[in-house]
Amino acid sequence: MLRTLLIIAWTLVSGLSAGCKQPEAMAPFQPRETAKDYGRPLPPGELALRKIAPEQYPDFSRGYYEQAGLREAVEHSLSYMAKPSSQRYFPYGDISHSRAVASLNEFLRTLDEAQSAEQFDLLITQRFDVYQSVGWDGSGTVFFTGYYCPIFDGRRERDAEYRYPLYGTPPDLVRDEDGRILGRQTANGIVPYYSRREIEERGRCAGLEVAWLKDPFEAYVVTVQGSAKLRLADGSLYELGYGGNNGHEYTPISRQMIDDGVIGRDKLSLQAMIAYFRQHPEDVQKYCWLNERFVFFLEAPGGPFGSINTPVTPYRTIATDKEVFPRACVAFVDTRLARVYEGRIHQLPFASFALDQDTGGAIRAAGRCDVFMGIGPTAEAVAGRTGAEGGLYYVFVKDGASAQTPDAGG
Image (cartoon, rainbow, N blue to C red; front, side):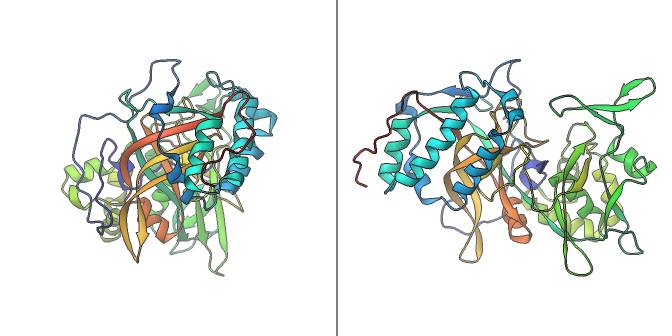
């Protein structure tokens, strides 16, 4: 599972919003503290989605122009939904498992039939009911960030240069039937698992090393992103995916760095943090140990994979809190994302369909969503500069939806 622990800069300072007008080049964000609590939990048992009236629907025609990888992502969701284990997470409210599967198939048919943006919008509104995330505030406000899969130099064996380990899943890690971490099995019962500091300082997972990196903060980033492709000495890539976590809550380290004055609030980005720790490696433990959450890995060729154990697709996979959002279903994202345009990074409108295929340790409740933005340096650059409010919608096929294609200018 590509555990999207998402500490790219805007997740690091949760509760911030930003953006700039198209097509101005992106200047450094200037985040500010607000009273907004994007991670505000819903009341127990309450779901994140509510059905909305047609007059509240977003303009789905905009999604007609953003289809790269979309069909592939839908097929991945259908592959997951074909597994008997997927049925345990339904019904989701009034959405049965069979209706969720039918919605994926109907969405593929709609992609095939629509011949224009206008017809696409009409087909969606005729064939599907629309549900909106209630957001953090009950009014639909969702904060979007980006995540990615890094590519770093690494080794499978320790040497004088590559000294910072990544660990496999400990055999004493206990989960419940839904995969939630319960803690560490001992002779006297289950106790909380070791913190990041205990693992790194006291060698609690010695003998479970699966890879070694030469930069301690790069190792930290991998344990936050939850996956990585490591470039070995012979040039081949060693692919690691999510194997579990220690069950501790994620804590952003950037707030303390800002408070200490080591990074200015207006300069905050993942890239700025990487540069700082390369200049001050003595500070890595000081700050990174503030985040007690730690991720374990397994070899995962062909990845990265989402929490439903299917490949994630750039800009077509989103990560949400699976306690309150439905797995594998069709969503519509309406926000602004950092994108590369004419060789520079801009904040641009993004209105497109995606599939809910991943989970994030820092993504909580109805007010947060993360967009997978790809693999490697370019994805790192845009993911680390993404953070904006927007709307998140899901579409589910209506009972008895017409199989006829309407005449809508197509």
